[in-house]
Amino acid sequence: MAGYKEIKGFQVQTRSEDPSPTEVQTGDFYYNSSTGQFKVITDGGAPIGTWASGGNLNTSRGQPSKGSGTQTAAIIAGGKNPSSSPVANAEQYNGSSWTEVSDLNTSRSGSPGSAKLAPYTATIIFGGESNPSGAVTTNTETWDGSSWTEVNNLNSGRSYLGGSGSSSTSALAFGGSSSAVTETWNGSSWTEVNDLNTARSGLGSAGSATAALAIGVSDKVEQWDGSSWTEVSEMNVDASYATGAGTSTDTLAWGGYSNPPGYLTKNEFWNGSSWTEVADLSSGRGATGAAGTGSTSALAAGGDTAPGRTNATEEFTAADFEIKSVTQS
Image 1 (spheres, rainbow, N blue to C red):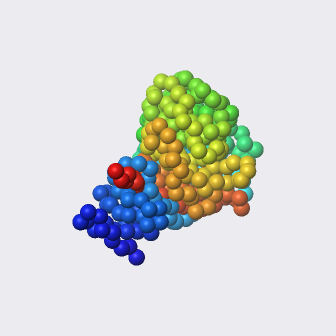
Image 2: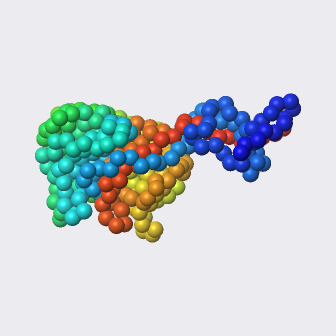
Image 3: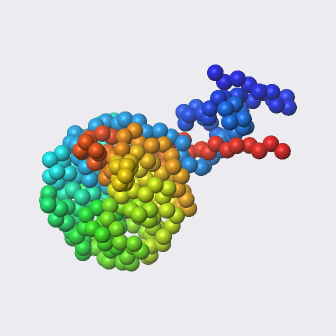
């Protein structure tokens, strides 16, 4: 139980450990008896939060679309079922349960790209693998909240690519199939623009069509400013098939695969200049579906695991605050 410490006429709460996200308020001041430090809660900093179980997908799947929407209003589509076949199935999340909606016109796995920041009622999905043999596809489909429509294809077919965007008419496709190719979508056609600096497959992604982040594979991270890619600070843990959510300057990236140790639980926060490790997933997995608009609220659904494909969903919720030690003078 917390006690109080007398300091120059003021009583300061004493704690044996730092508070959890549900216990704190900005401005709180306390003494940590385990570290012997006075600490204060301020705005900003790395998100301090936890993952909690959400409603399970109706269909277990690995390598689904990158996903679109928020933690409480999301959609993912496609993926590889436990029998390793691509599926056309799509599901929407309402914050507690998944509901099956209209299928894609083209079954696909191989982590197709999507407009990550788009609303779950107006998004786009592109690329991936169209059969169990791993044949890549250029196929692109848009979602209007009730049905999928095939539109003009990517110029280059790719799987395990990065995808970002804010709507069904504004998206960015990059990398995949050991390629550096980048394409922009304007609502009617794809146009090739400047390539990534490092060609790669199995990368995570976040952001919009004009401000995106390409995450992972050999530690590499690149930032897109609407016209070119710039290499930025590397992640703390190297991973392929990690998943990202958020903007290009406020991002969570979790899971993935590294050999060794295998599927990862790691989760890192990007603030626009550096990466910080934050709360881990409860179980290791890679190539998950995702949703979320920032680092304090995200959704991980499905993915590849050591036993096979999963239908598990985890929700990340964090308070946007920082715990700072106070130096006594």
